[in-house]
Image (tube, rainbow, N blue to C red; front, side):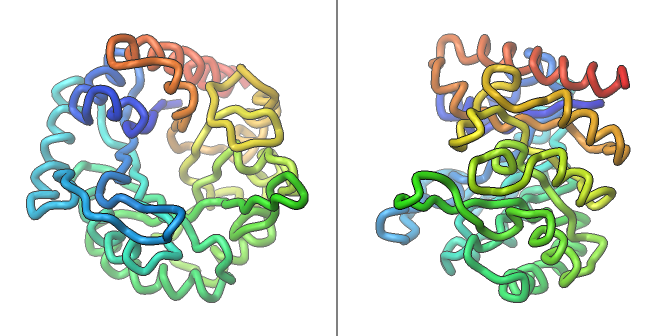
Length: 287
C-alpha cells in the first residue's frame, strides 16, 4: 500500500519544493498537491483576497511542472491534489478548473473538490457537471469529500454535504460519472454529531472510494493529528478498507501535528508521519 501526505503544512515553513524533498526523504511514496495558495480566502468576510503566489499568476502551469520534476528527481510522484475551498464562494469556484489543470501538469490522478457544505446533492451536482468535461479532457478525476458544520449551541459538529453514507452516495449517484469518485476524510467521519463512523462510510462507499484523508482526532474536533495519537480506532478503519479491497494511496492530512514544528525541524515531523502511515500500510498488508 503506497503512502502520501499533503504539502501545504510543511510548505508553510520551507516552501513547496523543499517540502516535497523532505516528504521524499521521510519515506513517503507520493505528495498531495495542496493548492490553497492559489487564492487567499477571508473566512470572516467571505471574500477572496489577491495572492502573490505563483499558482495565482500567469505561470501557474510552469510551477506545477517544476514541482512534478522536484518529486521525480527525489523518487516520488504526485498522487492527488486539493483544490481551494470553500466552493460555496463563487470567486473560489473560478479557480477550480485551474486546480484541475495543475493536477494534470503535476501528474496527479485525482483532484479533491469540496462540495458546498449546505448544498443539496442537486446543487452540488451542478458544480461538478460544469467541471467534469474539463476534468475528463485533462485525465483527472474529481473526488468529493465528506464535510461538517459546527453548531455553537450544541457544541459539536452537525450535518453537511456527504457527511453520512446516505448523503455521500446520493451525491455520487446523481452525478453518476466514472470521473467522479469519493475521497473519505477519516477524521471528519469520526466527529461527534456526524452519526456515523469511518468504517461504516468505507463499507457504504465500497469501490467508489478512491482517495483518503487520514488523520486522528478526539472523536469530537477536527484535530488533524498524527494517526495513533488520539482516539480513532485505526484497526477497524484498516479492516474496513481491506474488506472493500481499497487500492488507492494512504494519504495523510495531519497539518495540526506539524504545527508543533518549525522550518528547522519540520523534516522530523514528516518522518514521524511517515512512520505512522507505514504502520497503517503494514496493518493493511498483514490482513
